Image (cartoon, each protein chain N blue to C red):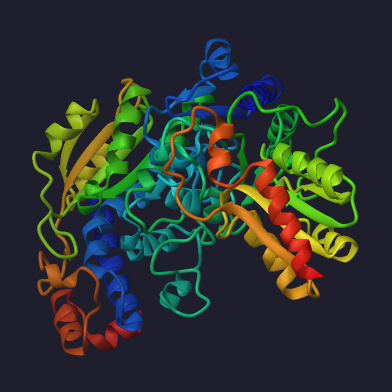
Length: 309
Length: 272
């Protein structure tokens, strides 16, 4: 996804003079090329994220549209108050693009797992919060950020994620994407972890004949309420899934909608319940060890549906 | 305005500020008084351009030490950015004059209050001018206490690495923070080592400030740090250099003393 996201920033910069790319020693993919071809518009801030984010707000106040690109925690956590005061409170069009989200930096250790960002950003007024789930969607989401008026945040995880969409896929912020139709239960997920959701749905179909709907809730805020309520009404059971803390992320956002309107929908959240302190040789290893693999999800959904009956 | 006229204007604004705090009963009075003369010269001395029309090419002014906002409010009203009558709504419910500046008030580029943000924001406006080859300058007023924030030094390094010569930081160096004397010496050496051009000035000498701001070179390829030596609570002996006054307003008996020192009376003050 990183390759596609940075390429999309490059493309936007080619097309629109006000687009800038800001990095904190995180210039990669097409951004390296941008630095050569458009040197005044690819700005290297060094390893100093707080200054970078407030500076982006200053640039935006002068008519620029800065895309700020670096790893999740350094961007969101290190510079959080700067995002709040300088970007959000001023409603400035700063576009935050975070790499290494979720467990994408599987072998790098705890400091590099971006697993609380959704919780933090969802609480900021006027911030649009999105998660890309495939290379194509990452590029489309970056382009959608440009079109949005105010501040926006996008998680683009790592590289090598599976493509889930055909060319021509239409990405609309705030409108969830149906990935698999079903009527027995729903999995609402976002990000690259959707591959696990789809595999879990296949497993349940094959083993139990369960017909599972899979929704890509790429925009966590503002969330697609209609889609959630439709899943509740049509399938009666919803499992959320995210490569993120279960506290206050996608699951929390879905729960907030259901709490007022769910009418007894069976509901459970899958995600991280604590820090992931494991090292993984692969991302899949970590998903296995944290209970986020297809087989875990299939079990969770099966017991959720059973408990509802 | 001439230096003499600026001095008189600042004295008038000191009384306005006294009255603002007398009615608000709270707020950061002494920090405002330490940068009042600097702000007066910037806005009323014709240094800052394009503010009233809010031109896209206006000089940017960012009060990074946002708690000193009373001085900025008084000067902005005097410069005609909003009606002076609004000044007495300082700290009131529904007012645009919050305890720290908010963007809803004309003349405010960015809300400040949390320290260590304004100078970072200012690197962005200064960089935008550079990218667009515009002449507008960015003035950022920072505090000495604020200089303990790490982000100040992130901005310092970035500004010099990127040759932001349209960025002028002004250090309101009154030597005191909320609880103790600010330990930032040798401060000029620090900024010089970070690649800034340094100027030092008496932050209450209107002539010296006007002279310095007028002749300011902003094409030397380096950002400029003006170290302005100031007195916290300047103008009122009960507060000058007194740490207790970081965030408080005068009580009735203190008000009488302040008025006497300023050559006025409480009755006269109330008629302002």
